Image (cartoon, rainbow, N blue to C red; front, side, top):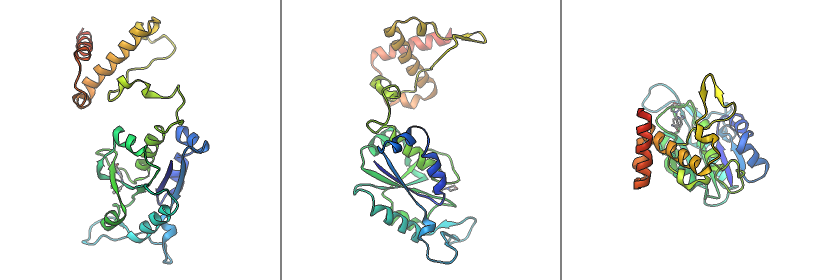
Length: 246
Ligand code: 4H6
């Protein structure tokens, strides 16, 4: 897959993309990453990429021309069918379903905004999709773009080893994860749940699934509403809630 980012801080993007799962995927050439700096697409002496907002007010707005030239340059080098995605608080919410859809594409161009964002006409003329990580504000779009890259790259075939694949379990899909424990068996009087030491793989799988259901119900009821529980799932959840109350 061919990833690319338009950013005024290319070193920031480059550095994040050297580590962990994404860094390894790049070294194995499962993913390519190109970064385009709008400042390299200016023609004035000061390499101006921003200007004052029409209508007045504080802050600056990113100019169309350097961004458009950056996107056009990347488009000429990326496979057709690579959409331009702008990360902003005004976008549709990015979730695992969106990540799965993007993982099926040949590539993408992620546009990271700075200042107060970009001139709206750039969005109209050059952006295919506007995405948001959620209802919070970052100082720039780079970290949001890197979050999208990370979430998508880990879905690509061959990127995660068998050990790392979190959702081998189609069961657990759409639920919060169960709690995890490692050695030692006891820390300051707090023991690992007994079932995890039992060696009973069926009982362990049942407990983990019950924990996932219970925690989802308590912390993210919106996730359970999307699922529509079977009688068996409802029973497991009822048992979890009964045990919590004791
Ligand atoms: C576009 C427009 C994404 C990008 C404005 C980006 C949060 C998210 C940005 C801005 C982002 C998200 C500039 C607005 C700084 C606030 C960069 N913030 N901002 N939720 N910031 O995905 O001021």
